[in-house]
Image (cartoon, rainbow, N blue to C red):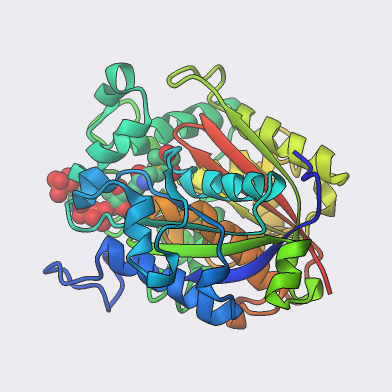
Length: 413
Ligand code: CAA
């Protein structure tokens, strides 16, 4: 979808992403609530952009499993508790599993194409108040429960262990190949004060082998050898908020387009649960990104900076191939070449991705567009890419490549 008029990302806020392994996470459970994370993201987005909350026309809130993790639904109305100026404005929840945040951004852009001028997209998830095993059961609601839940208690880790198994066997990919992605994620996260795993340092040897810090935890014996703890995204609490506007909206706000990022296009695909043809291909991501590339009038090689959905390390390699940066089976070569490092030609997941920055499910898609914005506006501190990026791409994925959203963003100014 190429927007029918210029649409701008004005800015926003990402909260600290917290959970097990981060010193400020309280293992006794005294951590910020879903509402507190969401309120912080929304109000700091107003403070950082200077946007008056009164100016917001609508809001879309990405959240996947608030009812399970936090006994809380009705996120549109929950979000309004953040700021009394929002009262009465149309706000609603958007849900598409781990692509909920990406879909909130899609809804924001569509609202701007159909009459709104200034729209907020926010997302939040709290997951650390239950064990990883119990939480895995909640996350499994994003799979086809009747046929896929039985794979393992850790259903999504098992689904991506299945992809890793097929990918390794088809293309002779090694654990060390996959380890390069994990090492990059942790190294980048070590430079990012907001990252869940900011204080955890790893070596390539540690993340490429099975050891006390990197054990195989699935019960499914066939899939168990194909996934280690450090291959996984984190169980994280956090939120993010982004404000989008039309040209008219910018005029109302008194904001110069050159201080913004332009939404050049988005692609969005949804396919039936439980219906993956080839575990070595992210077909829906490929199609969503293909639509976004075409509508933005760019090629994959034009991308300077990207945020891709590395829910598991193998997923990042499959993303490289789906997004047109590597031929089938060659994603690992791209990772090893350094091309996707912070100083590479296509800097991918510069803040640590889902593996190290963390994965508060409903916030992830919003965090992705905000990270592109932050890189383009030089706000990434120790993990800032050396040359100001002009073209950015996001790839947000719900379930096993079932709902996919991809944005192309262009720098202005
Ligand atoms: N050796 C072998 N097994 C061990 C072990 C050891 N040394 N130590 C622990 N284990 C086992 C235990 O069985 C343990 O479970 P129980 O305590 O319930 O028995 C299990 O490993 C996990 O250990 P922990 O609970 O201590 O692990 P953790 O809290 O550090 O969590 C993790 C690690 C399980 C990998 C967790 O981070 C995780 O689940 N990550 C993935 C999150 C996820 O799936 N997110 C969704 C991604 S999919 C997506 O993005 C798309 C979508 O739409 C959903």
